[in-house]
Image (cartoon, rainbow, N blue to C red; front, side, top):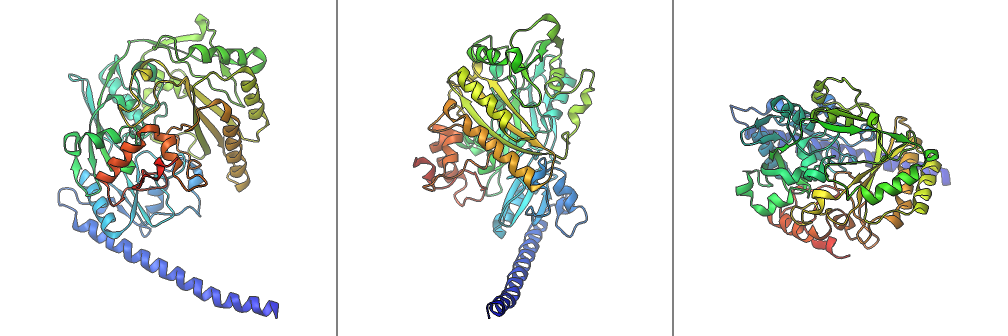
Length: 505
């Protein structure tokens, strides 16, 4: 009887599940048909939108989807796929996408470069479309005013290259990875190795063009100072779509010096790190020294000799920091595909306010060696200088004075097995837990652009990620959200919520 009962349950459930599945597909098809028809109705003759719409029925759909997925964890057969992708060719296409997605009740995910460590810019558990900005990549530099307009889909490598074509003594403070899209990179802060001298990318943004939740194209004046404040460090995807940024270039010396000197634990690396913690945030702001502990290679050290240093124009230092060999042509900055293109990763972040003692460092090194991660490394980036002079509420990015350095944890692997993914993610979490006594607390601060889905809700259901990422700026961000997006159209797993639950800690 027991076996017969199981069979009967199965025979009843299977048709029921099939009906649910068929109903879902039918609903999705109806929704996407309505969405596409809406897009077509908002198209204009000068900028037709038909060539920018990709649905699963298009032969190029998967190629378009995969081309800007930067982490292979989110490029599997089981990864949820969008109902459609709109590869905007003009700002009007962005406006139409927002209007029609809102009308159709579909979530949108906004992708500019694809460097989302948790895939939140192109993956969702609910029906969604991707608004892909990679075609909007114009960069217009005006050397007379020392400013530039850069589209959200342009990469910082393309920006660096365009600046170098105009001047040897101008630059822009942004990240190391060339393939970062300006839309997301800048809106999360824009963090790079010139921060001690010049601050963040957002500290040099003077205007922006955005599309709001009503499909309106706005600039700084028409969006208002509250929204302009929020999108500089608060993550624009909670509020609007970035079309373009207006940035102020910075002046740099014609020649700068770089160095990279490895040192092992046996060679006294712990002593070096102890010394580095004492001086890296207080020395001349023109000097940026990153420590990179890792399980495969070793540590840079503070003691330098002349032969360790190399002078070069600023633009070539971007290649040096990216790990490119001497003599690599500058055109590599224009390559929009990262190397390796097939890789897996898990990232976390922390802020350190007091030097980690020797016993703590030794505990950390031991844990790194014990953990079964394929490649494990950290990047410790010093603060001080300009970062200590800008108020924590000047922009939505709150992590300013009081920090010795910021940490990034990276586990990297090539094996696509479930076991390898689980092992490396767990190893990253274990190392992060090992650092608990030595990093910021209440809140345990984290960097928005080092996306980490583990920062979510606590046992009481409160949104702890908001205070971790934004500290005391949460309240104003909540107010901006309520004002500019009262229907909560722009939302994702870690977007600014409508209700102030994040304040109840």
